[in-house]
Length: 420
Image (cartoon, rainbow, N blue to C red; front, side):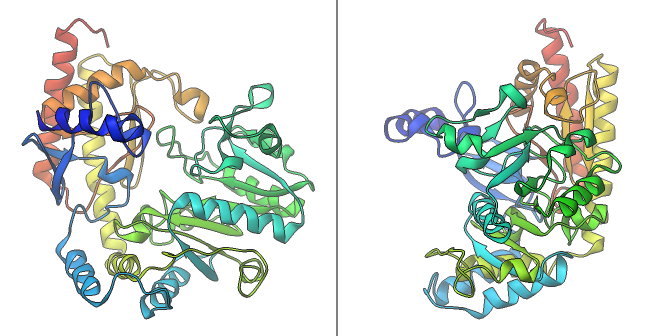
């Protein structure tokens, strides 16, 4: 198999054979040769219906014609200039029009960079140092945010992060209003995924985000929404538009770049004016606002409207309903968390409302399901704790084929002796 050969070559020159740990799964990951619409095509000649969608950016599917044409035109005119360009102004204007809480925005190259800059900015604005994050929320490979665990279980999620850095970050549980008492006048900023997407999809309970907003306002702490996954995916204005709760700063990525590397942070004018060169909070980058990404992002954002979101939500409802029927008929314990065009199938008999309840799901059984679905032509993310996504390119036939593949997959698992 070409993928096996490529993986063997990769492991000799790349740590673990991949450039991001989640891409590796047993016995070896498939390698992609190309992708179009709702489908991804492997080096081994397989066509897969894709519900990973590069972990969320591809709201119109792979390589939509309008995007390919816009990017091709820009590449002919240059890929990066090191000077300002009209497309970054136009994209910034589109972001400010779309996202309710953003008055000014700075483009960077990843969601992690955006989170790092937002934390620095919150500290500069408040003249405080302490940060609060939520257990299970992921904000990129950034030292002060690679921390998890509540109370005495708090720990760094990577070697190489000092105790001093860990000590500046407190961790509290998601969806627990009582834990918001931790937000006091020592706190510079509180960063949260308004809808959790990195232990699978976890939806905020009624009142949680409103109480979080109140607590930050009372303490004078900067509230940061990490909308890297949800921004432009759930609504043109993101989760904050959907829930009617507005942060001081927002980080963006994924859909914003139209499938190209991107990040952004933006928010209240009096905070953003502290960013260099207007202020003294340093942020810079060779590829910040690069014209190819800016043109790609513009072409996607200009295509997004209410009809796109309602159609995506309707398709996702139909798919999730069908998944639920099949799993119930076959006797599997499951919970499906779904919002808009994002969903996670948790293999558990308990509701999932935070990291602790997500981790009770049967990840080993999910790995079997993932492998069986691959054999039957469907690609879900390889981890129980990642989200699935739909795109505008997914058709009724795709959904029907997916449900047929799921039915075959769960029957194969059961016939192999694995109890649901």
